[in-house]
Amino acid sequence: MAVSPAEMQAWCEKLLAGRAAAPDLTLNDYLDAVPRLSSLSDLPSGTVVLVRGDVDAKPGDAVGKGDIRLRSMADTLKFGQQHGWKQVIFGHVGREPEKSLDKVAKRIGEILGCDVPFISDWLDEETMTIKPEVKQTIDAAMPGAVIVLENTRKYNIERVLWKAKPEELAKLAPNLAKFANELAEKVGKVYVNEAFSAGSLDASSVAVPAAMDRVALGDYAAGEFDGPMQKCLKTTLAVFSGIKIDKLDDMEAMISRGSIKQIFASGSLAMAIRKAIGQLDGKPVCLGAAEDPANKSEPWYIPDARVAQAKEIVADGRQKGITFTVPCDSVVEDGSSKDELSPSDQQFDIGPKSVAKFHEGVTEFIKKHGAGAVAFHNGVFGMFEDPRFEAGTKAWMPELKRMKEAGVEVYVGGGEGGKALEKYGEEDWVTHTFTAGGTVLNALGSEPVPYLVALRLAATK
Image (tube, rainbow, N blue to C red; front, top):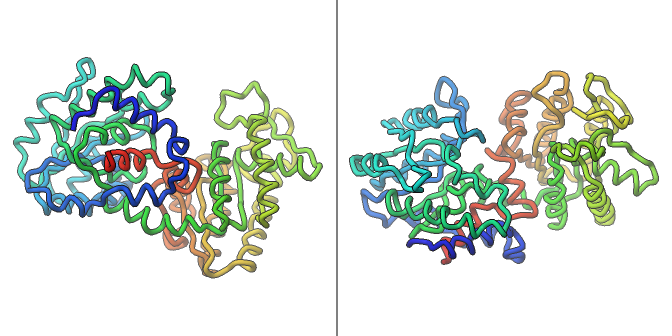
């Protein structure tokens, strides 16, 4: 069903509005509205199915290395093969347009045990049309074939919604509509999203479904949302870290559910909370370079408004009996540890006193809540890629194991948190590791997952 520019504009307005477009809808409301893969069982052999794949991976030298996201797609792709569909996978790798999915296509072939053709250039952006070789390749393919298209972020259209403002949508909508309609007309009108980690406003994830006749959520993504994610909605202990201060919004939303009893925080978010606690308790705290307006263009900058938000969160949390555990010392640029930052200092990790404090905090949590509690950990405690700033993250991983051994269900958001567990721990130290931290925070936090919004819109239009 072709989508008009006006319809695409209205569609994108809802996407950009996020929760404000449907403030009463919960995660499960979105999930209930989206069809599952089995709903497509009636499609005849030879049907072309467009698969938004979780292809942002760096395959190693053998299956099982660097390809967890690709392997997560296997059941959905095999389901399609069994039904004789011609599946055309598209998606992104990294953020750079020049990156290629050629190695990903090869690895998908190794996982499925079949040849997977790769089309390196499939869109003419000047005319916003799908190139003829795409249809030629599809037409020549046998039922059950799997084809991979080049990195969607190679093309500007994929990225136009990343920083788009509502007033810009009237100009963007015609090309987005043309892009979606071209894929529907020349590739396929059935769309499956099996890209659990792809939570950005990529056109392939959020605009293309507008032109589809039928949509569905892949088996792996549905399983993550219907299983482990439901447990995380009842989180007792939450660990927030990283440089993104907007995670305060997610923290606020998670606290509002009423199950959280303890919060551990590190990174920029923790610094905002630490300063807020200082203001509430009459003990001034300096955040160093992070609160200097000269650094407001940096991702680790903490504006006064975020400190004020943190103050409200802590005050509200204390009334609800929530314990906030934050660093008491910091590792700075030269690798030394400081209890108090000077105005020019920048925090790169938590210090040894904080490591001990966090250990004690886990001990108290286990005593109070223990077996049956749910812990959710996201991110890392410092710039752990640099050995000078890895101590905090490295020391925290065994705490996850300690909680699990005490009967706590421990869930880890993917991305850096998953990398840290792989580097400093073992897979069985936790109950479950997601393949995407950002998507999990969206689902648990303040804003809906963009592709679930799009799939719901498509399923209910």
